[in-house]
Image 1 (cartoon, rainbow, N blue to C red):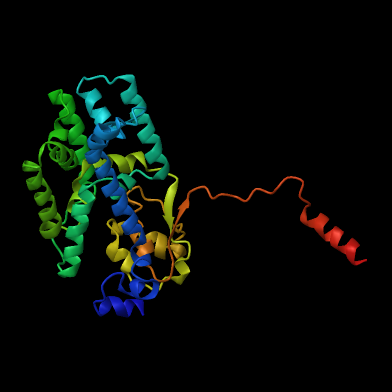
Image 2: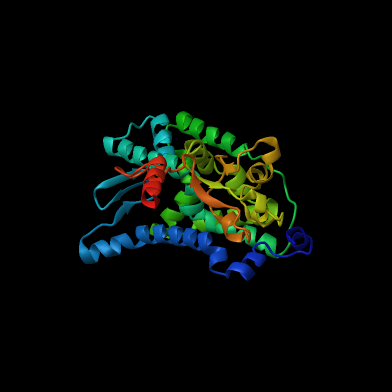
Length: 316
């Protein structure tokens, strides 16, 4: 039925909505949007809340912030640029970067892209419109281009002695715009949208963004992963492939059993967005960790052989 759906032009996730209901077919997408908008709201309304209550929930921006005047958080990518530019950070900056690095190492580096970054909302809208308007094709931009861009931004910091990339980083521009007025930031957002909508699908996040490239390296060995643990139930509907922002990572874990591929998606390019879980009617996917939790036997509990002996004694 799945292949037939794809050939007949069924929209990705339509069958999941019919089977699971709209909310369950969009559960992870809704949670991601709540996360992204909540983070934006914290930065926007914290000054107002502090004025009323004298309590700062969070100060700063995504590059560097202080939560509840206690917990420092620093973008490791910005910290590295700062060091290359010749500006040595204070202790709180290093501590904040370590906290962020450990978090993304555990949950997956590109979780930043799908659960935190506000630009992801723009690129998701562009991808949704391309699907709705049945726009196909476009320029082919190599997926490794983002790593070249990443290297260029670090080299630029070293040569110029400044964090030059952050002047034009769309995420940084959005946060500055929310504080001082959007202005030119609207133009950058529009440019990213048109790039993804007209030029190439997922061009910015998937092929060009150095921030995503950095976090993919940071989370290359992260614990939290999506696992196609019931891949034998896959009906080849291709919905997961069509909605995935990094389509190349799904094929082997889903269909590579004969070639010895593990069902867990271990690629560092996975954003852990959960859309494959949402749209799958056969419940093929779920979140798991690389190291499965084992059930620990309770102390002072009899073994299986002891239980058998006890049972035989009772019967006799």
